Each structure stands twice: as C-alpha cells, then as structure tokens.
Image 1 (cartoon, helix red, strand yellow):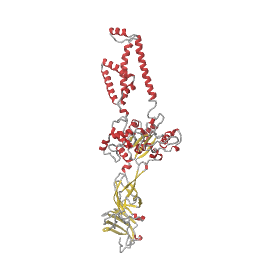
Image 2 (image 1 turned 90 degrees about the horizontal axis):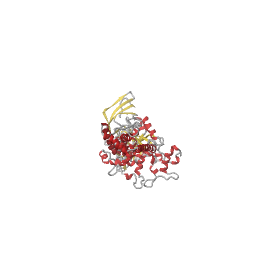
Image 3 (image 1 turned 30 degrees about the horizontal axis):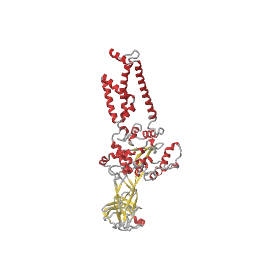
Length: 576
C-alpha cells in the first residue's frame, strides 16, 4: 500500500545508509565463499541473495539484510586480514613458496600497516555512523510523541488493563504494532497489512460524513472501539490530521470492489467513494466543509475546549491552548480559515460537543492526543416504519407502526404537522413500548385540543422513538411520513358476539362479564369504555382487562374483554 512506508521498495541509498561498511565488504565475502565452496558457504551466498531481493521489494526487510551483510562482510575482511597478518610476527598462512616470494616482493611492512590502519578507520567510521543514528534518530521512541508526551503509553496501558484481547480496536494502520503486543487488543490493520481493501474500509469509516454510514463499515470490520491520534495541529507530532489524504485515496482505489460488496451509499461521489476536492482545495491547501464533517475530525476534535480565553496557560494545557488559538484566534494569533473564508470554529461546536449517535467516549489520554471511542451500534439496530397513515376530518387519526430493528423502542411523541398530540397504542397501551420486530396500531385524538382539519388539507405525521443505548445513554430518533391529504372520517361500527360472551352473577348486586367485540366497520375503531344499560359515567365498567386483542381494532379484528365488579340487579340482567 502506498501509504505504508514499510511496503515501499528500497533505494540503493537505503542499503548504504543502513549497513555502510559491511556493504562495501560483501563482494570480498562472496569471493572467498566461492573460493572455499563448502555447504555453509553456499548457504550464506543463497541467504544473502534472497534477503537482498526481498529487501529491494519491501524496505522493512532491511532489518534481515543487516545480519547477512555483517556475516559476509566480516568473512571477507577476516580472510584479507589473515593474508596480510601472516607477515606480522610469527603467524603464517599456508602459501606456496613461490607465492610468498611474489608477495614479499610487492608487500612491505608499510603496506601491511596501511591495510590495518584502513580497516581501523573503516571500523571507526561504522561506530561513529551508528552513534550518530542513535543520537539523532533513535534518541527517543516514536511511542513518546514529541519526545515528551506519554499519551500513547497511558492509552496502551488502559487498553491492556480494561479491554479484552478479543476486543477489536480500529485505527489507522500506523499503530497496529503497538495495539496488539502492548495494548493486548485485536486490530484490523498494522504495518504489515497487505490487504489494502481492509485499509481502505478503515479510511472509508473515518472519512465518511454520515455517522450512521460510518457505523455500517465499522460493523463490517467487527469494531468494538475506534482509536484516533490527535496531534493538535502540530506537524511534528504526526497526528491523524496529517494522514487523512491516504484514507481517501486508498479507499477510492477500491471503489469498484466496494460497489460489488453492496457498500455504496447515497453520499458517494460520482465514480469514486470520495471526491478529494470536496475535502481540500489542492491549490490553496485550505479545507472544505466535508473535511470538517468527517468522522475523523469529529473524533479528534470531540470534547476539546474551543475558547482560548478559558484555558489556563499552564504547561499541561499547552496543546489544548494552541489548538483553541488556532481554530478561534486569540491575541495576535488569527484563526485558521477554510476555503470559503470562514473560521474553523464556525464548523466546530463549543468545546467539541458534537451530537454523536454512534461514538461514545471510552478513554482520553491525559493530553487528549489518544482518544478511544466505544462504537455503539444502537443506531443501526433501531428502526421503525410508519404505514397506512390516515388523518380524518372528524377528530382522529390512525397509523400503523412496525419495529424493523433489533431493539425495543419506546414511542415518545407523535405529531401532526409538527404539533404534538396524545396518542394511544393498541397492544402497548400502558408503556408505549414497541418490542423488536413487532407491529402496533396508533390512535390520535386531535380533537382533544379543539384542532380541526378539513378534507384535502395537507398533513404529515412524525413519530419520535427512543432506544436504550450503551452506558445508560439513550438513542432518540424521528421518522416522518410523506405529505398526504385529510380524508372524510367514517363512523365506526362494532358488535358484541353474544354467543362468545358470558355474564357471571357474583352476588345479588355484582356481576363479572367476558365479552367478545368485533369491528364490523371499514375503518380502525378505538374502544373507549363499556357501560351497563345507559352510557353515563356511573354505569361504566371501571375495571377492564383485554384477554385477547386490544382496544384499537382494525376492520374485521376481534377483542375479548373481561369486565369486573359492576353493580347490577340479579334479575333481570341489564344490557351491556
């Protein structure tokens, strides 16, 4: 993958910089191996050539090339020094007399000393080169951001102590080699990931401007948590705010495959997943609206203070103060602006209080550089549909609800043309809960407010539902019908099936009754109350229980109701 530096081919300079002197001595080592030609020599040459080939294809394998270069280089150097060393002191090598005479005529003590001096200089150069790399490149670990911030260590320890090894934490690929061995969690990408399709899906989830669409991709990746690294707009800290272009580009590389997987959404660009020009102006390098709307930006900026005047100017607040000054401006520091000339703050709610529906804060490091968010899929699992909605001109309205999700829903509010009215649910009249996968009928008595609708008035109905979410939170959402016309109300018609009804005389003054009621009309009908003889409050049955069915009946539906403890004379029995 182009964004993964470890996957890049190795240039010649990489070999030289990482091995230096042993690289120069490798030809000598290969020569002497060929000359001796035993099994170990053949193995060493094969090992060197194999590692050299693969290192040329992927730069990370330079780590394996180093020992091969050291072995072959050292072997070549040792053989050269043995030859020249044989003329110093008593140590000799087995050379023919003729060869010795030839060497003596060409090599004197000065030449021998020069060779050993050259080797000493080369060894010193190798040492100085290693020390220089240690001081300038390896003086601090990348895990310690900027050489002073320990946010990564804190976050990794939190994961190790609070998450399970099977918990999936989705982040950009850079951090995979830290999350798994140190944080003891499962990742989907790391520095060795060759599956660019999966890396692209991670980029898609982060750069989506729709939180629900992002959650769909994260569910595909089986994510339990997402992690972002925020560098507070400081280039040297290497935060995700500088890595987002690759998230777009790698994702776009697999546009056709994602379409075949059925992942296309209505906010995808024409011919690609994302249009990079909608995120940044390539000429001015200023950001567009979609960049600020991306989930990556929301997750990085989330819950960070935005007013620099309210942030104490102390060492522990330097990063947050710098960020707030950059987006809002303060003193002599002007605010950053987008491509349209608006300040960054105009895109960011106060103190980063985004209206998250899916992402819940799980852990923020001390300086806020590493943020771990719990992925709450309640929003994906909560849905319902409204069908057969009718508003009549005689004071009532009806519609049917179907819970199409996996979560139980509590119906909180019903509106007609944005005006809330009391409502009654047939099956769940007491708690207004619509269980998962169930259906129910809703009755609205808008006449209670003395409101009137005329035939052919244009209306719509909205329903607000609530589901229990992660961490004691609730997810509230609203569905709407299309506009439709008010129609003429029909008079309801019901009958009591006497053959399926019974009346039991408890004593001389009290009866219980079980009756079956059927809707024989053409419209949904709501049973309000039952009475004995005359419809006056003192004759109403106050204790009723629906054994079968509900008080709201569709045409042709039946309900069986138990009526309890109604005062009535023993004989003759009154009419119900």
